[in-house]
Amino acid sequence: MASPCEVLVDSVDSGLVHEIVACAATEASRIERKFSRYLDDNLIYQINHSPDQFVDLDPETDRIIAFAFECHTLSEGLFDISSGILQKAWRFDGKHSVPTQQRLDELLPFIGLDRITHVNSRLKLPEGMQIDLGGIGKEYAVDRIVGFLRDRYEPGILINLGGDIAVTGVLQSREHWNVGIEDPNRHQQAASIFNIRRGAIATSGDANRYILHRGKRYGHILNPKTGWPVDDAPRSVTVGADTCTDAGIIATLAMLQGKHAENFLDQQGLRYYCHR
Image (cartoon, rainbow, N blue to C red; front, side, top):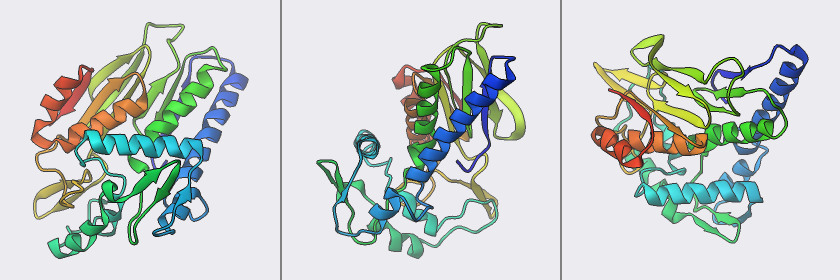
């Protein structure tokens, strides 16, 4: 998952805890192997290397692709799983310089989910295009793990995959889980606390992925229509929702709204924390 991951279990039974952690790790690994674009032996690789050919999708992949198309429509094209190709121009490691407009102009013609055909559980990409499910993959993994564990184990469990979090239920010893939201300006210090009895929270922001260039900070949330980081975006947005997938997509869409992020979040009717 390319990030720190945690499993917290409300139990003193070490055998049970190890069993739960092993189950969570197995499911996380399965999802990463299946949906990572950086592996060369999965369906995503086949899709990205079969230009102008239909590729059959299994039911799980078909549902995720359909969800991505729905998010693309709802966001008016701002959420786009074909925009991962911009990684060829941007390296958000805090060190590298920004790309030239010419380099971005070379990549922009290969972005646009409306150019990809998804019909009857089959997907076809035009030559030069790719898909990247990283924008929803971790949140989906959290929901899958929590659903699996909730059906099998009684203790309250919290799953944290790189800040995307969900719980199976309440704790025995207290009313709720306390989750600190990291201050993007002060590493490992909480800017806010979310109390969670059920459901999930997800955070989108630039605390760990950014470029500092000539005194300006460029966050990793990119506008797929321009190839540039979103102007006036918050440093981070955290959203609470019934599922981690829902929380994650709303947090990302809020970041993509730039200076209008808070207005967008207010319209959703969900609990959130926005750090400017």
